[in-house]
Structures are given as structure tokens and as C-alpha cells.
Image (cartoon, rainbow, N blue to C red; front, side, top):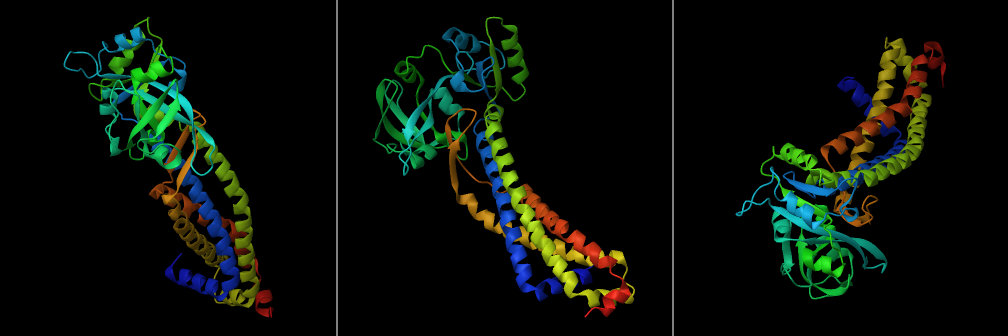
Length: 389
């Protein structure tokens, strides 16, 4: 496809401004929807995959999928601290954070409806291992008190989360003393307090999980072998980043399937629009096509010219669709994670890979809509085409 063919195709599209515009508008909407679906899935994946550190491990009870379902006894937590593979503190014990995770209802701003929120009891070690989280307003909670800090997502979307506010859950009232930001991670959708205070408030005798810091990136196998070899433990562990990424699977699959189904339905209309535009082009240029054939242009060349027009339609629609969808990057989505049943807030994310997929999909729509008209144009008999009025 040379530059002459592209210029010729562009001129013909400009000559039919109304039909071309209507077709492009339809394709732009489909390309935009497709881009937003991919951006939703990618934003969720980045949020949960970025929640943990590759050098941290999450240890839970065997067979559980989330921390809220898991229980780890104190005796088990004590044993975990002695296993090889963990980074050691000054006393030679493994650096771990014993944590408790529960779900509570908090009212959302604007709608006044309840939503499940993760409450995490953590420790100084746990705070040190989440280096991406830092206080942006107020201060850190003090151990041994009924003080909590809230993630940015919770602060923006839920009532009663300003500094100094009181929240009632468990068996006591908690004071919000700080707001923290954890970047694009899912920790922004959590409320943090002291582990022991949370256990007392919820009458828990066991932890939900133990978070451990690996001695180095290659110590994972050593720690896995030690835990599996101890018959007193029925536990499993994953790298923290993988653990949270797995929790996005069900929701991201649902968004992906649902969104692509809608895109497929709308794309049918867009393809039909492209096909009408191309058929109209063939009908209006019958004599022109006959002249090209008489000058020696073969059927392949005719097909190439019309497919070039279809590709141009797709490229223009794809670029405009991406431009339209790019504004959604500033939109914050708040939804329920099917795996944890807790609310999670995240932003849509546009990546180069998504841009390529959207452009490829738009070109595919254009080509699919243009292939039949192109074949019809190529099959026109020269004499019949030249006789056309």
C-alpha cells in the first residue's frame, strides 16, 4: 500500500463527508468503550498487584483465599518467626507482622449507603514493610490506643473519616488521627489500627495472617520448605504482590467479559456502518473504477484501494476513541471486590499495550466493514462499469 493509494483513499473519504462522519462517530464510540473496558481491567490489576511487596510474604491458613477467612494461632505465629528465610531483627527472630483483618460497614458519601471496608490491625513491623504508605494528614496511630488511620480512598468516599471523627465498630469507638496515602495500591481502601487493640475489640483469639519480610529475594524456597516440613502447621504462603494480584482475578474477569460483550454488540453496528459507507463509495464511483480497470489496474489493486479507505477509517476512529477514553484516567472507580467482598477504589489506567489493542481493533472493524464492498468493486466488469451513469 503506497503513499499514492493512501492519498487517493483519503480524498475519497473527504468527498463523502456526511457518511464518513457518521461511520467514524459510531466506530469512535465502540473504540472508546473498548478502551475503557481495558483500562478498567488494567487499573484494577495495577492497584491490587501494586498493593504488596515482592520481598514480603503473606502467610495464611491452608485452603483460604483471603485474609478475612484465615486464622493463625499465636503458637503458630511464634513458630513462623523461627523459620529460615526470613530477615532477622536484632534478637535474631524473623521480622514479621501479626495482623488481623475484618470487614465492617461504613456509610458512603453522597449515597448514604453502607459498604464493606477492610479494617486491618497491624504492627510497627507491618508499617515498616509497607513503605509505599505514608501519612499525608494528621499522625500515625499510637499502639495500645483506640486510634486509627484511614486510606485516601476511604477518606474521599466514606462518611466520618475526617481527622478527629469517631467511628464505631467492634466493641468500641475509634478516633481517626491520620490519613495515609499508599500510592495506587489497594491499601488506600483500608483502615489501619493496632493489632492487639483490634483483636480485643472483635474478640478474636487468632490472627488473620502473618506478613513476613524475606531475607533476600531468593529466600522464598527456603521458607516454603520449612513451613511445609513442619507438621504442626497447616499454612500456605505467597509473595505479597502475587497474593493481592490473585484477588483481582474474579472481578477483572467479570469486567473483561461483560465489557467485551457490550463492545462486540456495538461493534456489529459500527461494522455495518463502515460497510454502508464503502458500498456507497463503490456505487458512486462505478465509472471511476471502470476507468482504473481500463488503464490496467488489476483486481488486487482495486481491492487494495478500498481496503486502504477502510483502514484509514479504523485508524482515525481508533485515535479519536483513545483520545476520548484517555480522559477517564482521572476517574476514580469504587466497587466491590468479588473475592474479598470489600470495597476497593482504583483509577483507570491507559497503557501503550491498550493503545495498540484499541487501534488494532478499530482497524479490524474497518477492514471487516470494507472487505465485501472492496471485493464487489474488484469484480465489476470493465464494460459495465464504463457504461454506468
